[in-house]
Image (cartoon, rainbow, N blue to C red; front, side, top):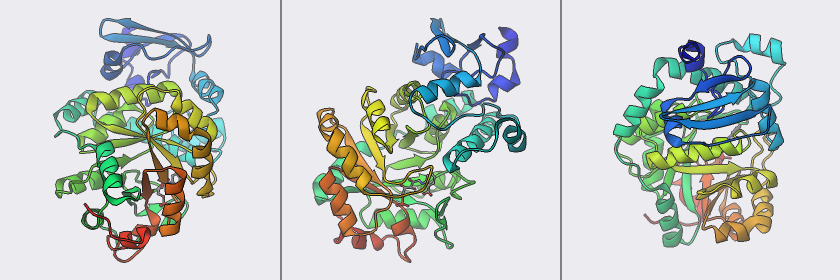
Length: 374
Ligand SMILES: O=C(O)c1ccccc1NCC(=O)[C@H](O)[C@H](O)COP(=O)(O)O
């Protein structure tokens, strides 16, 4: 066990939340301190995650190999696989596994490597401590609810986004702080800051700069979270909310990450794209905010009727639980906003249509057909 705990490979491995083990079959693995505090989180069928026991300050997970992680995910309809080889190069990974099946899988495979590098630079213990010392979070959910009530149109989460895999560079002349300040000035309730560097040309530094520039809107860290380290890191640089993507994360991962968010005072925006993901997320306790993405992150197809379809089927359950819904992607004009509002959203997350305009702040009135009040 000591040898296992001392393994640098283990410490630098962004394995699906509670199952950090690139280790030999049925190894016993002690989780990071945050997971230990969270208590027993998951169990699975034989051959996947066998047991999770509380052992003082250490949780013990017994599981087999990466295949079992992907098996658990596949059993929940998740098509994005993990390679679980964060210290290998992408070339080696692709030789062993074949190429990723789509862009989202490619992003996640890169993220596994990136998180391992981040962990090596800023160990979890240190990041956890600095997250604990960060100024208190601002109320992301409350800001959305208040803006909706005040304006009578969905609250705006305005996205600070330079580029994307589907659109390439959206704005050449990009200053994250300037854009954030303009969004705030013209009535955005909250901001979404892309932190992925490779595919979106974003950064955690941008998030930190926006926070430090005195922007008061609550900030969503728009990241592809696969590991608790990213959540603590986001909090340590000033995030008030974090994105959790159901197409990537198992139910146990989402549950575990929600506990961490609660512990840190962060709001989680749990994103779904289809009915199966919605059903999974609605079964998880303590989800307050669901984002319906109109864009398939695998194919890039954007279809705003996705929001309508999902809310027709699940709107009652969502309302019963007091969950607030965010309509995401592909919203360009007042008709688009009215359409998703009629479908039942209380907030919208908008990037491209604002950020590509010369003055992204003034573009807000064009998107809603009126000026938004603070
Ligand atoms: O936007 C992409 O190309 C993309 C590709 C792969 C994964 C995620 C992606 N985008 C994240 C988002 O969903 C959007 O940034 C967000 O909803 C705003 O969308 P839009 O208003 O259409 O820029």
